[in-house]
Length: 361
Ligand code: KG4
Ligand code: ZN
Image 1 (cartoon, rainbow, N blue to C red):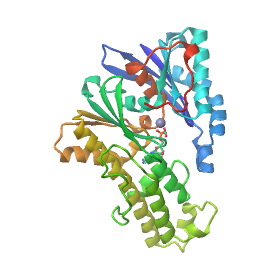
Image 2 (image 1 turned 180 degrees about the vertical axis):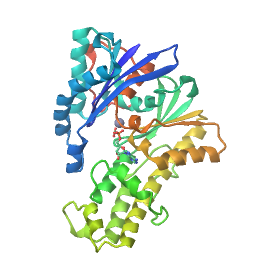
Image 3 (image 1 turned 60 degrees about the vertical axis):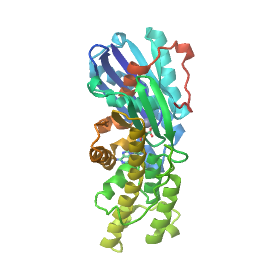
Image 4 (image 1 turned 120 degrees about the vertical axis):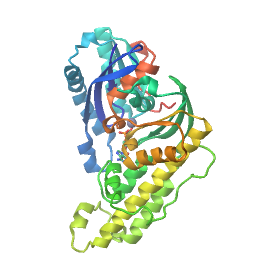
């Protein structure tokens, strides 16, 4: 079976084609085209929904055409089309949903509306032997908009265990990076500087690490980071304009010890976020006696998070298997939507498919 997956929930426009059969035990990725309006948003410090949607209108058809060409597949060979119908930005979701409704009607191809968050989980099943991922499985979804822990008893049987009460983990990375004048998305930049920093220098809070539930909270951590950076870099208190650290670090007045302090701040922030994510994930894994942990979402690209989860599993001498998608499948893409549709999707008449920005589990 050939599935075309479409993802337009945020700033990306992506189309991918997967080949999958129940017998083959494998989802094979044939193509995955991702077009992003990210450079436009980097300048403004965050995503402007209307700008994102206007760009997606331009990208959607060329992106689908390229996905078909890359896979050497014709539209009339596609068996099903999977599309993200939520959660996300309404303008962006509508581009994907309404485009595929027209394609479905005109070409008589069945549609599978798909939950973006379930897509992040199913990125782990692409080009992986299905039998390797054993149930029950725990999934940690960490992105710019979400931080959730869910339990999968089997395909499609998903129980939400907890999520963030305020900011998502990725949002905390992004907002702290923005405070330092770094462009969106800030997670990769914080991670890059953190490599040269000492994570023990600043004692940032680990919000809710000791709570008995599987809830998270990252807004207090962001506030603590703000206080600490303003204390050490007074320029952040006096400048209303977005200052550029790239510029400041080149300035002669910015000493080597200042540079080290900046790296230490980033390393300490990353340490705090990763510690909370790993602690809650391991607690849930033990409670529900899971056999696999599936990580998904943009923050899953973070190397410290990957390493720390694996070392926690090893330390417990646990047999739990850890799965993290390759980096290009951690951030938003059409392939994960096609994969989720294959395992859990329900075919729906195009007239009944509607964008749902606040869709959850
Ligand atoms: O899943 P995604 O592409 O979009 C959403 O659905 O939100 O995730 C984007 C998020 C951003 O917050 C970005 O800063 C974060 O993923 N991110 C990272 C890293 N790479 C991307 N955070 C920490 N470390 C990274 N290496
Ligand atoms: Zn996402």
